[in-house]
Structures are given as structure tokens and as C-alpha cells.
Length: 543
Image (cartoon, rainbow, N blue to C red):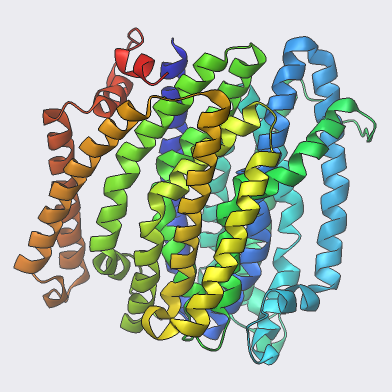
């Protein structure tokens, strides 16, 4: 099987499981908003969950994998026994470090929450968040170990089991959202904190423990020894340490920017429920971002790391260019679809229970501005691993720091000067604009350092995608004008209308792509074949 075919197969396996995970995540979020709506309790839960979840994203999808996989892959090629000793030392260093961080965060929970509610007005509003943070934060210990286990398994091109742990986490939280579990739990909480949010927080902690338990046996079968071993003098450990710090900004800049959005959303200048609306909008957008962009990025890093270790820089460039075209083929129409159908999507997915029509309006506004940046968010997920595969985490970190600064400046401007026009959409717009800056800077540096990726061919492919997406968008506009979604009162009719429009839009987009002979469509169709054909001319043209 060619490198291209292996990459697509791996990404598709991850994508399938990720879609299942995102569906479970949607059901989880629906349970949360059904029980809490966009109330202060909901904002407190999202804020308390957002802090350790940021660390999860940075470790699981960012710095740990970006710094560990290239070093571990190289060590495996040179000396497998020393590679496993290095992995064991990393495991115990990470375990001790995260245990200490979790303990400090629990003891100083009040200070942690206050730091991240700088614009939060009355601090009495966040007492529930402080309590929830004490329950949730130890989850960081389990998620860090799960992230390392995932990175090790990914180095062996094992993606399915690590990706499925997110499904278990979501199912655990869903289970804790039902009365037979959360009602007995509420009796343990202080009277003023007796809310389903407490049970949901406990579900996160239990789910994190189950994630680690799923991966340990697979590591043992691969050859991992868990006997305690701590050594900061190990050259490989030191190399990971040097790479990890900068990679927090490089791979995790999207998550850091989103967290900055959450901080600004605590401002009393924004309407109540802004934190939850940003969270729900981000969850909807990540259904697209996670279904293939993150999946392809996960498969991309070990693939390019092995190519670089073998001295095949030309193949590494081909792999990146091919991945960028595939993800653009998916995210460009998805972004336009989310923009045009944002309100029906939010209404069908979440407007139940305590999540009211006002909650839908708030979330739809945030989704509009996040969707504008979807292609850039996805492209960054592919560009950063290019640098990490050559063990350069500093370049994405520097660019990420500038992007982060731009996000803070734009958030400040939107909050104090344009809040009347943007309202809770200001933080989302700031993140989208910062993402385009991040992508443009990384792409220019990439071309100067590694050589061209035939921008003419890439632009030609993007032009075809935009034409197909524009026609598809016209269909959505006609459907919305000819048959008013608001006139449908029953949920089943609303869901049927939305599903019909989406299916028709996808059919139009794919049909036009075939007429225009978009190479990306034929590449994706390879996944439906039983055998892997030879390399296509399209991939070679990207070199």
C-alpha cells in the first residue's frame, strides 16, 4: 500500500470513530443544555470543564504528541529497547508532574477560577464553578497519561483504540446525566450546590479513569514496561522537554484562542449565557473539524515523522500538499453550510428543555463567526505537524504567540467598541481572524523553508471547490426562502427539513465536483475500493 493510501485509510478509521465520538459528544452536550440551558449554572460548568479540557486538547491533540512522536519514532528505528525505556520514563515523569498539578489546582481552585474570570463582574457568581473545578481537575492526571499512551500507539500506526476512548468518556458523562445516577449524587453536595452539574462533573472524572484503563493493556502487549523509572537526564526525555514547551502554542493555538474567548465571554458587557453559547457553537463546528481535519492531522504526524527520519523530505511535502487539498475539499463547503443553516442546525440539535429560543439566537450568532474561520482552523491542524515532523516546535510557537496576541487585541476592540453590533459573536470573530493570520504566516514560512507545493495547482483545486460550494450555497438559500423553517413547529418535521436540505446540498456539491473533475473526489473514492491503486498523477503534481 502506498503512503498516500495508508494515510487515507488511517485518517478514515480515525474519522469514523471520531464521528461516533462527536455524535456521543452531541448527545452529551444536549443532556447538559437540556438540564442547565444557558443559565449561570451552565456557564459555571462549562468554565470549570473548559480549564482541564484545554489541557486535554493541548496534550492529546497538541504538544505531547507533537514533541513525543518524532523523537520516539526516531528512537525506534535506532534502538527499540532504549525507545521503550524512554517511553517508560516519560510515563512516570508525566504521572508525577500531573499529580502535583492536579493537587495544586484542587487546593487553589478559587484562585484558578478567578484568574480565568477577569471580566466576570461579581465573583460570587462563580462559587459553583470553584466547587466543580475541585471535582473535575483531577481528570487532568488521567487525560495526560491517556495522551501519552495514544502518542505511543499512534507511532505504531494504531489509531482506532486511542480514538475510541473519547466515545467512552462521552458515554460515561451521558450516564451521569440521568436521574438514577445524578439524584443520589446530589445528596453528597452542599445544599447550595445541589445541581445536576455536580453529577456531570463527577462523570468527567470517572470517564477519564476509564480512558487510561482502556489503553494500558494495549501498551503492555506492544512491549511497554510500567516499572517505576524517573530520569530527567535521559537525552530523549530532554529533547521532548525542549520541544514540548513551544509546541503548546504551535499545535494548541486554536484551543488557547478559544479559551481566551471564554475569558472575554465572562464580561458583564455580554449577555448571560455567552460562555455556554460559545461552547455549543464550538462543539457544532468541531463535528466537521474533528471528523476529518483532526483525524487526518493525527495520522499525518507519525507518517511525516517516519518520512523525515528516513530522509524523504520530498515525500513529506507531497504528503502535506495532498492532505491540505483533501481537507479543503471538505471544510470549504462545510463552512458555507454552517453559515447559511446555522439557526436551523442549532434549533434542531439543542433547542430542548432549558435551552430556549433565546439560547438558539445566542449560539447561532457565535456559530456564524466561528464558521468563517473553519478552513483556517483545519489548515493549521495540518501545517503544524509539518514543522513538528522535523522537530521544529519553535516556529509554530512564535507564529502562535503572534496569533494569540492578535486574538487578545481583537477581542478587546470588539468588546469595548463593537459589542453593540457583534454581541457574543465578537470572541468568535476574533479567533477566526487570528486563525487566518496564523495559517498565512505558517504557509509562507513553509514555502520559503521547504520549497514550493505548486501554488498554481493548489489554487486551481481551490477555485473548483469554491465554484462547487457557491452553487451548493445557492441551493441552500433557495430552500430557505421557498420553505420557511420557522413555520414548522414539530421537531420531527424540522429535523426532516434540515436533513433533506443537507443531503441535497451534499449531492449538488459532489455532482459538480465530478463534472469539474475535482481530483480530491477521486482520491476519496479510493477508500471505497478493496485494493490500493498506484500513485495518482494528482499527488505527484503537488510536489
